[in-house]
Length: 95
Image (cartoon, rainbow, N blue to C red; front, side, top):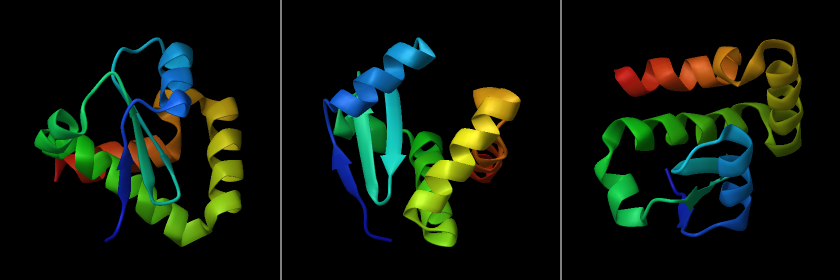
């Protein structure tokens, strides 16, 4: 699976602010954007990497815009943690 990692991402910094987190990764398509963590440290964390790779697969499964729409609706209805896409990513990362 091909993907690109972007360090010091403004989008990830915004996500960190919204989520009130220090270290954040956010996926758009095949791009993993990071804030508060280096690419090297992110790649060392196999669970975190697996989690974000699940999101890349979700984009592939649903398509770029459809996935963003479904993800946002799910987050509004159930919140970030209970979002089914996040739950799937957590489950897969534990394997």
